[in-house]
Structures are given as C-alpha cells and as structure tokens.
Amino acid sequence: MFQRIIDDVRDGAVSTLRLTILAAAIVLALLITAGFLCAAAFIVTLDHYGALWACLAGAGIFLLVTLIAAVCYALTRHRAKARGEKQTAKSVTHNLIADPMVVAAGLQIARDIGLKRLIPLLTVGGLALGLLARRYEGRDQAPAE
Image 1: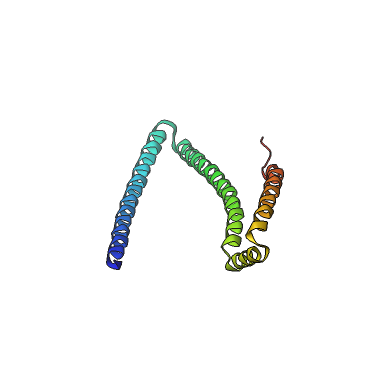
Image 2 (image 1 turned 90 degrees about the horizontal axis):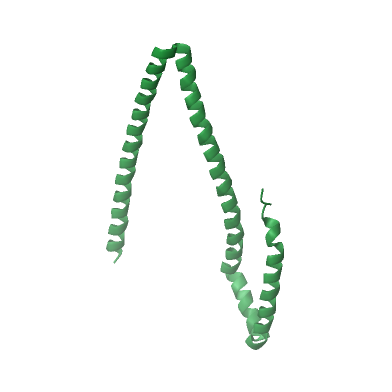
C-alpha cells in the first residue's frame, strides 16, 4: 500500500523534473533568439541612422519593455494583496472553528443549555450575524472609480 503511494509520488516528481528541465531549455532558447533579434535590429538601425540613434533606439525599446513589466508586476502584486486580505479574514474564522478548545466549549454549552433551547438561540444569533454582515459589507470595499 505504502509502496504504491511512494511510486506515485516518485513518478510525479520525475515528471515534474522533466517538465522543469524542458521549460528551462525553452526559456534559454527564447533568450538566445531574442538576443540575436536585438543584434539584428541594432545592425539595421546602425546602418541606416548611425551608432547614436541605434543605441538610443535599443535603449528605448528595452525601457518600454521594462515599463510594461513593471506595470504588470504592480497589478499582479495589488491583486495578490487584495486576495491575501480576503484569505486572512477567512482563515481567522476557520482557525476559530477548528480550535479544539472552542469546539469543546461549544459542546459543553450545548449540553448545559439543552438542544431544544439552543436551536432557537442559534437561529436568532445567525439572523443577527447575517444582518450585521450585510450592514458592514459595503464598508470593506473600495468605492468604484
């Protein structure tokens, strides 16, 4: 039984390693191709406009690529931060429910009060929590621009 699990993990690791090596080879080939294309564009610009304009054109192109990458990075970071805040709020609630002390205290309260009296109390509490959540729902979101 354990040998089958180990074999599955090993096969998955080998497959992942092969795919990673293949991806690295593709990236390396892409970088070499981009280098040759940049050299060719530089030579063509050098022949037509001279060394100064060829260098400025190359610098301008790489500056444009850098700015596009920086904007993509900033947008991705902003989205990840917003997603992380939502995950943090959910994880705090999950941690409280998963805590054994909280569960034990809840069971003790249920035993002391009795299940027949606890169900109406939980219903009213859930309704109140839902109303409060709906009331504060709009305050957490940023205004639309």
